[in-house]
Length: 292
Ligand SMILES: O=C(O)CCC(=O)C(=O)O
Ligand SMILES: [Fe+2]
Image 1 (cartoon, rainbow, N blue to C red):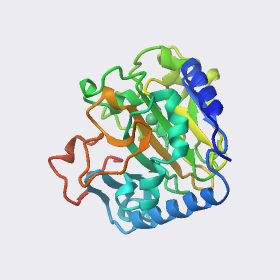
Image 2: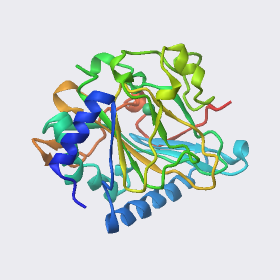
Image 3: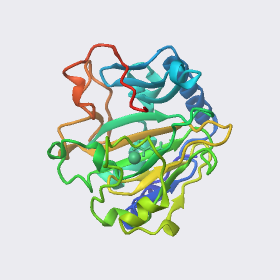
Image 4: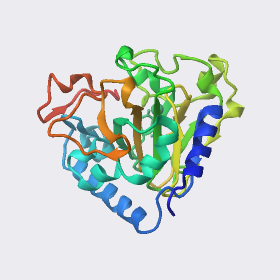
């Protein structure tokens, strides 16, 4: 099913009112099978690394076997550098049709990720937060709240049991609330709890669970309060996330669309989120145990 301009406009309207939206069957049929196969290939690529690996913007976040009984891959970043499939997918016509009502015709991408929640891995929840916290150099982005959108595409079914995303409708209008900023600020340690919402004046009863079929897509913003629980089922939850920004509001990111024209990666990576990109662009392993 090709995404219509009307569906994209409706999603943008709901997003502006409620801070999130869902587009069903953004990908289906053979295209969905291809997405699932390439996502599985990325997992196998990640498994080749004994610890968290970085090379430019490409990264695999690994839970190593010495601490977790077996090796798990929980995140991949910027798969485009090793996958021609993901390099084309991120700037495909479907994404442009979806994003134009949100961001206009000149669009850069600042995040490309897959999040897995392998059964048994345990540490696969993301505590309540607003993604603004991941844009550390806030002056590198202008008009940040309205110029950026994140989309999460269900590769596997996304259910309550396997830790689907949850959002608090309307929370995007409340400003930055500081959720999960305490301590080392690591959002994958500890779990989302109702008290965290109450502490900032939100009602846990308002939470919406974004249960998705493979190919469905969720949309949220930098100010939308969201989180997800660890997987307690035996079904993985691969979720493909991308953040896009209006190109004229940032010096960061990789071009996705210039005046609506799909634009490939250049020869070298651009600074997106990792501040260390320029200090340590070569392949390397990171062995700090953030999960301890
Ligand atoms: O994968 C998820 O469930 C949520 C991820 C998330 O919110 C984030 O990485 O900012
Ligand atoms: Fe987030």
